[in-house]
Image (cartoon, rainbow, N blue to C red; front, side, top):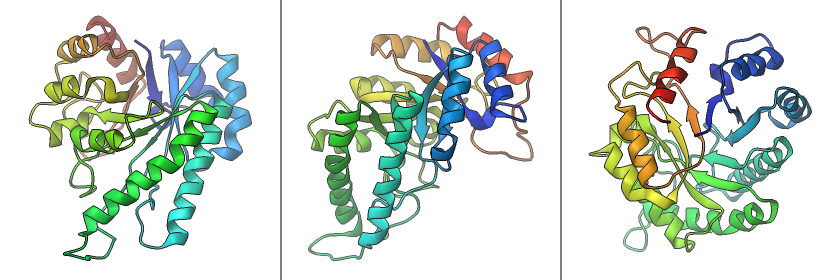
Length: 268
């Protein structure tokens, strides 16, 4: 399988150094953050080409606002998403990953007509219908990413994201992104959740059970490899790292090669 890494995890003082190191380690691609990306597009495209590397995705990060009660904020959020899609095309990234909403409810409580989450759910369906046509037209895939309940109340599990996809008739340019760290927090069984999600999964973040790099926790990556084989997943596996903690230092130049070697040994 193709393994990518988030640019922020690569050591190096310049993009050239970071991409060169990723190439030497045998990585297949790099994921880039959407914020500030437009100005970087020419450099990224050039450096990737020189090292025969691919862009796996553009990640919206913590940018949201799609479900805001104010029209101007929603329009601004959609504009950022559209720009990220255009940037993805320019750097050759096939995916744009976004979290629909962070934090608690923002819509008013109009019970018994609609609760905040019902209003926000309808707003997300409207958003997906709006941007899916552009995704189809320019040839990128949008991937909704559920995150844990400490970060959002809105979408925490794969089945919740899948229901939104079903609302737009399983549009082939709108799928679900899965992150192993969030799955371990929210699903009763992360491997079963992935197996059940099957065809809906368009992009996968791999991390260990504690949010660190694979091999630094308790995750069974051989079991993951088997599940991905069963569901015939052939997309990107993108290394991520869930923040920094006093007891969890940032990855080092020695951690990443060892991590990659372990993943390859499991069949990933």
